[in-house]
Length: 415
Image (tube, rainbow, N blue to C red; front, side, top):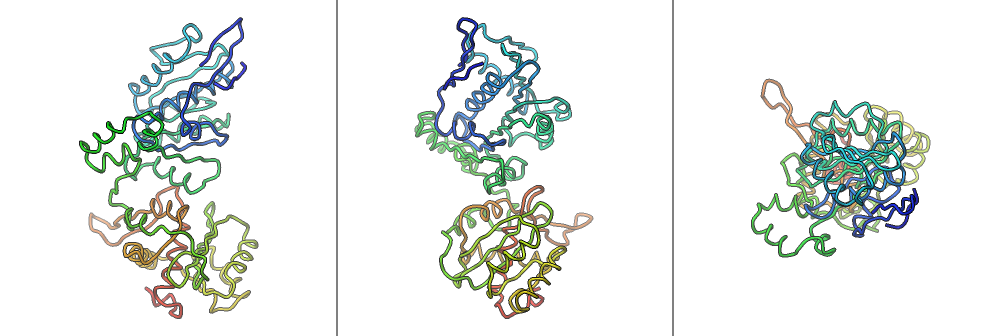
């Protein structure tokens, strides 16, 4: 099957492929070489059209007998919408359709299945060569896990699309990882403004929606901005208001969070005005990690997470430098709570400034919950959501705690 730059048609038994017209933001979000796409988009901005075009291209060009391609939506009704759109878009007589099973069989033997994710257990077992997860923010996490399992053998690509729906769902958290630069992932945000500029949405219609919908609903549906559901200790509004370009001033304090398992080692330095002036994030063996920390920090005061694997690293750093230079901080429930609450004050009072990027993505996803037994709260637990990193947040908290408590005060006196 020969691919040409743009619908599918048959001429003299030769099938040519022509990609349908797409907007630049659709091309950027869907048609790239990375394995995963996380796309948070305004309603009616063309995300479904882009997803259908991409999946059709995967089957039309890369398909072969026995190769399966999936479109997974929260319900069969929603899957049927995409099925009918593709059926109308393809040239008559080219493919074979099964309206009962919602399948499209291509001349090359490939088949696209339009499936429901309502019962994730039914999605396991198949080998899938490419998939689109539609309305991802409304699907259960188990459905994503099942789809991911189906592309293991084929190393197939996945495109995830959806409106924003709060912050407590797997899609939101995966978007934050992609936004922070997770390898193999591409994050895209498509707003109503993008769709208006591209001629996909009417400005009058969006303005009417803004007048008639509750503010939080409008912001999620049209601006791709999640509502603040109360689980973030810093406050999304304050997080955004503290974003500032990285400072060129000299650092006065460093905070270092050391990698555990698949985490990152992160170093954050603040200048005398509490503006982030150095930021480094990497994954290296311990010997290289120690050398890099020493090189970056120099003789500046540094607070290092010495919890668990951090103890021997701290000892090595102290041997290479001086005891006053590197000070260990063990994260306990009490010390972490106090540091995070102090960080929250610094952000909410706009004392602290940091650059856009991984720091903001982690702050945005960070959450807290009350802990206790028998319905009685006994404390607060601060952490990243399951599967997310909090290395940047911890490094920032270490640096800010050191600066706000006075660099000469041992950390044991903070708690």
